[in-house]
Length: 310
Ligand SMILES: [Zn+2]
Image (cartoon, protein in one colour):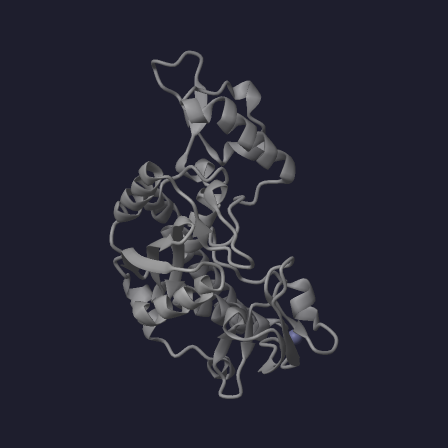
């Protein structure tokens, strides 16, 4: 697995994005071995063991949030390629797909559409099926992802309860899985999503991002980053959305064709004026996040690994 969290000396979980690259004082949540933060450009940012990797990290799947940083909905490489092709040929023009073209692996991404007006019956893309091709609008994306986030939480809670009840050999690892999942969930809920328009000496840029701090504080850092590349920088906040950290990476996936890299900075986009307006109205089209009782509890929780020992 790509280990994304380490335990600080006070028991708190620390996310890999919040520490500089290199040796840390953090410990592995599974084996308490020392960790080194790896924040290179090729692999996902992660923690590596300073000595040998422990068995749980080598063999368990990291309990990731569904549809947070991977959007291929668990399709095989072959099915994913077919899905993209079907979208291009049929989905994008709203054309029904003959069942003969859809392999069983793809059926879960489609809804069998037995419309009386369609004879013979045909497949069409569901909201879930549009996510790998990045064509689902943000509001619908939230409607697909939010129940999946809660469903996986429940699954991990049940697995941990079951392991404790059975006194299973991996019971502590199951509890660690649950704690790491709750920490990630807390992170996306505590983040505010923002969308910025930036006038530079070389034209207009847009930026998507998230922050847990006051937005003005973040703007000062963004301005400093950009002044390394542009003579003048003027930032305007187009919108902020609380508890919407879940959308940032899907935004990058959905609009990857508009991504504009500036050195090592990856959160910038170049949209024409019309496209920028469409993107903004799509963001404003998201329903405000209403926290469920479980989510309120996660947000308030002082998540640390010391809880696991109880
Ligand atoms: Zn370990």
